[in-house]
Image (cartoon, rainbow, N blue to C red):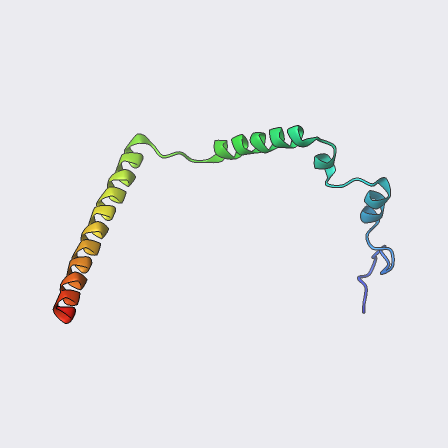
Length: 96
């Protein structure tokens, strides 16, 4: 196998950063230092940070989207009702 020119790592030793981390016995960086409550607090802080990035719809957009969904659901309910009625009559006709 060919190695990249200027590479300081040898196949036996791996990356130098991995060796340093293995010698110190640390796992996971910051997560390894905190207890379960610290990790839980970090999790919730990350949730709040992600929710702040969300582009929330305006009231007009929200009412438009809601109306579209309700109309679509009513149409699908009507379609399923018609299909169910047709199958019911077909089964009555076939099996008497």
